[in-house]
Image (cartoon, rainbow, N blue to C red; front, side, top):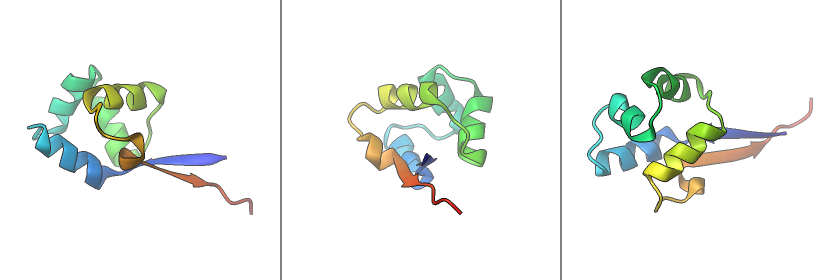
Length: 75
């Protein structure tokens, strides 16, 4: 199973470059609720819609720059 993690440092850099100072700015640009953005930032909980909408807001940024993928190791 693959785990996908949001790279908050890179996302924050791209937000600042785009003039987004707050998470609510990102939420508006992504057409998502502030609660959904908060869940992604604080708990790493997001789905396909979040990934697709984030890519739509930052179309020139590679997904690999915003997300890390790791294979889960069986115990």
